[in-house]
Image (cartoon, rainbow, N blue to C red):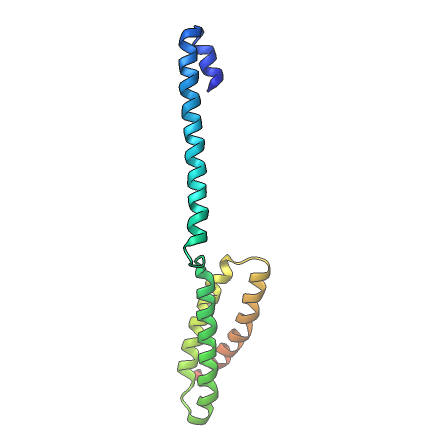
Length: 132
């Protein structure tokens, strides 16, 4: 922009006011940018709230569903009729883990796969049992 101002305004008396106005605008923009960055850091520091972690909440819920399925499975052997509730919980847990797995990479993908594999095998066995 400074080069354009220098080329288009050959006269010294017209160029200097434009250069000064440009410099004021640039300084104001840099100052505003610094204030926005500082406000963002202060907000994060003073909010007292941890940053949102939606994937962690989804993962925790999937694990909770798997735990509930395990409890139902252990009690169900004594009482019977455990297949449908366990299947429902495991299906939802696997759906959530698949959702996370599609976006995960590296170490996260391996951890999600480690949870999903045994659940998938158990779900397949329950489906076979329900087909009988």
